[in-house]
Length: 179
Image (tube, rainbow, N blue to C red; front, side, top):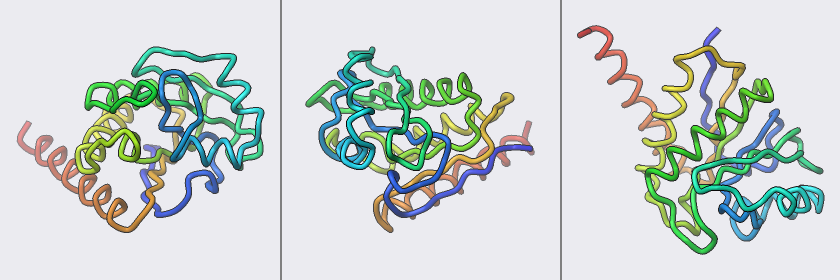
């Protein structure tokens, strides 16, 4: 059964899934944005694990427990250096790496934020395109993932991801008909 992709507006730290993805820096310092919310709601254990693991390579990811969150795991996907910016390349690699970590843990449900669109200043539309392409590509091979959520912070972000998904799946279907 192919994985279902869902788009919801809300706070990723409140989602009950096997793993949530943190828009991380490669030092795994839980500062502002999604990472700050994870630090506050997840408790000190997540931060302690990050300090033990980090730093990691740009575009890589690391897994910690979910602490006090509803999620069992947090996958910290490093799309930027601390204080730096996210690039399309680092976002693509970080998304791919997070999906690979999910497979290693046989995770069935995962929630992604719009990585890099906060303090890292990455454009929302490009973020949606890069992340969704990576997820759709990943799902072409066998996967433990059954549900993939994109948890977006407001209505505009939600609509951007939904519209981008429709465009990409329409292009994919058209490509199959032509091929």
